[in-house]
Image (cartoon, rainbow, N blue to C red):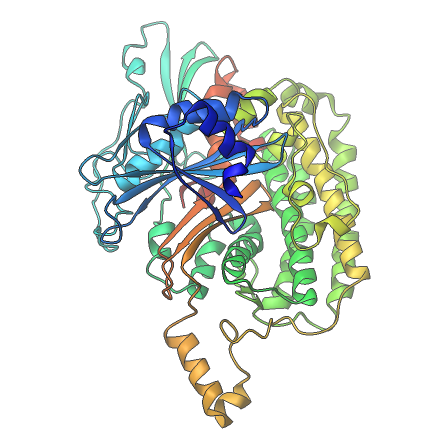
Length: 559
């Protein structure tokens, strides 16, 4: 019984009037709260040792215009690292009073999440320290993820926000404010950082994002489930295949679809190669920013080899569009295993070169050790996941803690750092690449035969010969192409261990052929939120070294 769940029981014990209802949505405990209890309940969930929900993963809004009396819903995703448990909180709000108390007093990471919900839906958070737009510009009219906001509506921006913080206006004669980005080459994306300097020391900083906001979530609502896949390619485009996998797995879980063993193995292999490639792009760019140009070429040669492997599978390199709901677009080439083994050799060779160049390099150590330090407590507070969190000493990897696709059957280790600095983030990514090679080799050893298609008529196109000769196949083909698949009504939060951390898809289905709501949880969003905090007290020259080690990808960050 859900009422006997320890989390539910503790909330009822301490806040008897807080809970409106409890549900279990595809294995995710979901608790609907009265809005006045959100902060007390969150404090209980976080600070009670028996619950220990220290991590806030995401906050988002949903608009149920015309479907419910209370039009809006604020959704909170929490995680307990010690218990390996998740809980989803929901707070319904009326259209004429879309206000709820801010939980920024509970988690530092709530700041940007709440700003996004305000920006997209107009939901206001009482007590928020800076409730302003974040993905749209300050002069934008309306709230774009509301159901009555037309997807083609635009508001041109012809102005610039001169100061990102009011305090910067009165910097004084002995201090000055500098802008870095959004077009600075070392930013590796369209980000803007404004820093308050005292000499070469950064006293304060603020980040501005949204320059690459492309309405990913709004576009998902106007497309059928399969046609969302190309949009996922353009999130973290350094490892696009992993985005395909994360999204497809969410829809498959929603529909109760099991993919074949062969499709599973191929998804694992190409995901791990994509992880390696992503880490190499991050490290190569980070090192070249520090003046170590040779590393850039050593990292990009195996990256090119991975691209050629992907091209042999699907005809594409950067944006693959290879995964389909229920499997893959087509099978891999006959010499796939041989090609993979050659890429493994290339990766190992160039990894060895890079380690010889850097691991005992005194200049590299001075530029990275003790630079960009963040404690594991603060990393958890901000909602960090992935290699950046593990570099802080937190042993959390979804492939180990919540295994999917049979990752529990693979022999691999999770590299953990100790200092949470730029050097540890480098080491963790280097070691993770080695572990990915171990996983790939094991998957190749037991590569299954068979089809890469699940055979489920709800999602799989029939063979072309059947379409031409069988009326039922023709009708099924027509329905899938012209109308699209129809997952059952419901909601799910599905997550995978992407290159930067937890890539989550929160999908709300109304039973139609198009998603009612898709909320992406991009791992680098939480990471970048902490960047200004990490800069305080650092040298201006350290800013680029710190940023490069975080691996912020604009497509994923801004969506």
